[in-house]
Length: 216
Image 1 (tube, helix red, strand yellow):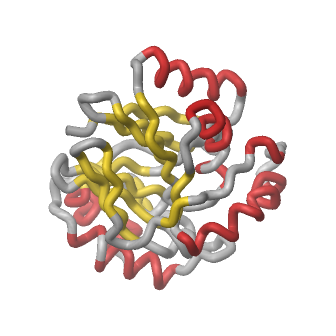
Image 2 (cartoon, rainbow, N blue to C red):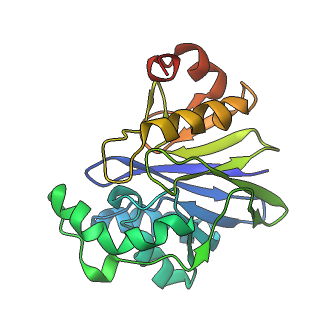
């Protein structure tokens, strides 16, 4: 069984998740720590709980989701995994940082070295996360689905009562509509959704109550 620890980091308030099993093996999804005290928070949690980081995972390459990758990778000697479409975009995070008034320095920049494609399986000991390709908010956006425990990490594809914006470079409204209807909507209604921003929700609740999705 996988357990989840949530942190809320950086000026854009991204949700960073540590996902771990009974043997204390873990992956970190969308490491968004930026300020020194935020770096210390996540590193202290990992160390004080005796967790063993296996890999960093990014749902996509937007600046708020990647700020803490290098700090964690450098301490634990782990690699970053992302969809190959997103890999060239990591060279452009400087522009996104400047647009949000964030001083994102080169020492905090980490490029992915592991490709994640639709249907790939990420092993966390005996537990698994399945990669689901959900473009729209970003061209190489992916979600991470734990079918056994009934949870999914949706990044910025699906929020509580909202969806990811599509007006950023690479955004595509038709693509996010397809991702929602043909991928996320197909999951069981009781699937717990850990969003990239904001509170948790469930697939069924959003199908019934999300004004953005219901207007698609």
